[in-house]
View (cartoon, rainbow, N blue to C red):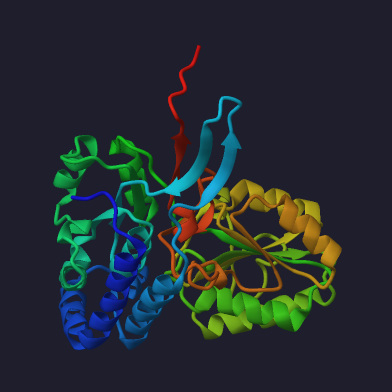
Length: 399
């Protein structure tokens, strides 16, 4: 297989794929219904991620269209130098080569993540979960049709229909060269991949996101943002899990009472530290370990902090390094918070639900990395590249 497809071909494949997804919506939905009917687990987050509906189909199409419209991330010059001996040296972006994406339940990953990897000039290996196999096989078939229609071989996108044992064997002793692995799923999947992989792994997907209500917060805004971040999509890694309220927040008790009432309307289980545990419809938080948990469920923790510094310390100790929010009308306080909190995305007065490659203008995301190398947060086209040195000479030798 050629290691390079020009940008015209890559964009043509993406445009064709967008057309095919739209034309084959009924076929995709029918395959997904088979997956949904076969799923017998009780994980509501898994079920939510597994389901494909018209809205998710539209999201797939939008992602493909946006990707096709973005600039080519390859061949971008990052550095240029002319040696004293006359050699011209430059550093340019280049594809990784082959990227393995291992994921649970989400058929839209077969479009969105694969599309980003493909636009970045990489060969893609997809290993989806058994719960979404029917949906994934249909979507990969569409990838192959789009590739063939544009004169490219189907090996650019390959689906690995392996069980757990076969996946472990492949990770430990790959039958082909793999340059990067991206696990998309829960902590157990990530730990499994890290344990057995023999090449670099990008850790992504874990949330445990915090929101701090500063003493100068707008109460109405804080309430609306918390409800949205917690309840809009509990299966998302950018959902909210913990709320910290400043001790000096005016009308604190009344605000917490309203917050609890709104959360209960959405059937959210509420745990609280000793400052709020005596309030109605709240259970007392008794184990410190819960502060570390990502819930992916209708569950939230509410606690109190003495000041901004304690909020920052608590988030940096317990948070997942994904997203953190301050609700405050004081821009200087927000500036200190955003610079001090150790998270991939930091917000002032907005919901964590926006930590998403498509929302950040990246045309979707390969992953939301909580690593610091080589990229942090939503990873789009410009982040899914490595680099290569180009040296042009006319016979120079080193003495």
